[in-house]
Image (cartoon, rainbow, N blue to C red; front, side):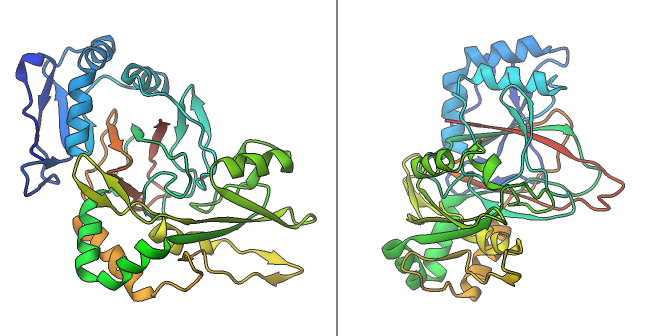
Length: 345
């Protein structure tokens, strides 16, 4: 599918080019980068432009998968919340997610509270639950001086390359799907990318309510140890791929890499014994070959785009089409980074 032209008659948005963008074979530029035509633009003008050109922006997102808004007067979490509301995308709760977050303002949350020197692997937001968001919106409140990018990659390209490189593996995923396992305690551990405890994961202190909410998103809870407040979460088998009609292709819509990389890093003990488990397997319980997982990570890095953040940037992602991650900050003790996020139905 070709990329729709930028209609300069819109009289507000202009397309700009950045060296990190990729030109794809169908003429699409990934991601599209929009800036205001007028340096004197105010937040209210940006809000009104989003509302009045919603259909055009929606079409642009369908064709590109990602839009970076740069140079607009968005300076605070409340400004960002106004932008989110202007899109008209309904909000949703992050039930079942593993990333530790804090609410900042309205529909605005921190992106991930884990230490900034930690790398976060590529993933679709909440890909392993039934009610996943269709849009992810990120906002740079404080830009990092070096590092800390949010790399993005078109998931249908990852699927096509994996199918070409490992056709047998992809066929097994097609047949069996993926099974995810996590062990978490009641409290958050903000030192880990997937460190949410079950209370904040399911927004309750009540185990019965947690079980009910887990079931609604396709999770099964098994309480392991009351003293340790430990629960085993089983998810799946889940589909490893989904169909992206806009690109007429399947997408690599799973949490294989992020679970293989992060989910097993949290030490889980019972009776002073470390629990050994595989955080992700084939849906039939068979182990995933490490070399194939690492090949997938290599493909993700080769195909991704990582644009350094600028204060005020807003990155709008089609969550079905695009995976995202986080690169670590260089000299994180001296440098700060604050990226805020919102997920939408």
